[in-house]
Image 1 (cartoon, rainbow, N blue to C red):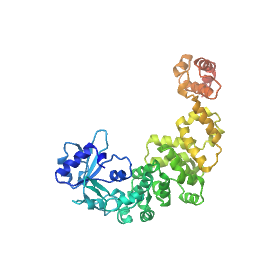
Image 2: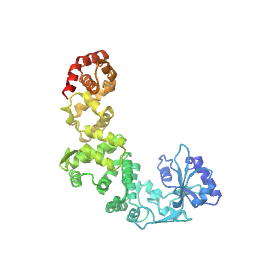
Image 3: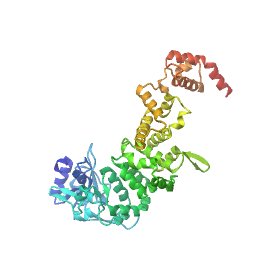
Image 4: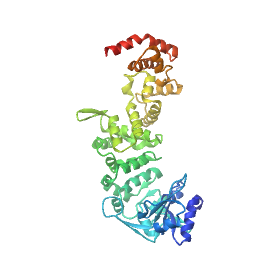
Length: 444
């Protein structure tokens, strides 16, 4: 463990110990050491009070915003903050998920007792490891187990239920039977959490290396309903599809880990297959048909995803049912340009895994193969790649909206293979069409 310590951590150990204080590394940094996982989030616990820490460590760049809770942070350029917290005990008396009373103590064992899981209740300093809840054994058994009575710990802070599920995905662990049963029985407590808290944990699950078991836990415990509350999902239909082994929903439960570890890819696959199992291609809301794309956008906004992520996910979902576009837009170049090459790469990543899961190639395989070959050829022409500009059209005599119209006409002709993308051919076609374009706008 010693070899992993940064110079700043070594100095903190030295200063606090020389001044008569106990100090330990705690939590994930110790756990991950025994798992051979990289972790540079140094969390420390000490018998020193916040006032004493601020005095002794004043030459560091300190953030004492949370000092009333016993925590100070040391900012280190180019590295994660080092968080140091005074040993403490907590009491919970309401439903805020935050302790209503904090008492500073002088005993590391009392401090470790307040933590969530045995694997996170390890403490280390130069004298050795403290493991009073058999966390090391649980790590060796790949087991997530709460400290004390599971229901009590989840009542204190419902986020611990999502954290348990998230850790199962990140560490490829299984949740202890008693802890898991407590999650199932107390899933309703998730409704206390903020949208941001639920979203952040769900995202970490999705982009982990082993999300399959965790996703299954979310469904088995019904927690997924609380994350996606009020999202037009017909949950009874979803659970029926699971019981009937519907391939779309089982694909999410069994194969999500095989998709690229990119949020937009896994989130798109998750939402598309979830909504398509919940309803047909569209849902009637207030007398209007709402598409899976629109339902997904509504959900993502409620969960407060960024505009950029919402746009990328909804674009994938929009074009994912490619069969809907084949008859209307048979030209492959046009289809690729409409969605964008990144979108099609993502769609192919999902579809290929879905083909593999089904053991067959569905009806869109041929069109996807053609798209893949066309992108590989790098022959796609985007509008900005036309060999003429708006200024060229002005030089011919086009004005106002006529410019956009003729550019669109030229672009369509190039995309459909009816016109070469050269300045000479484009200018000639534009000159030949001037009378008809101007007539269109005269009629308007």
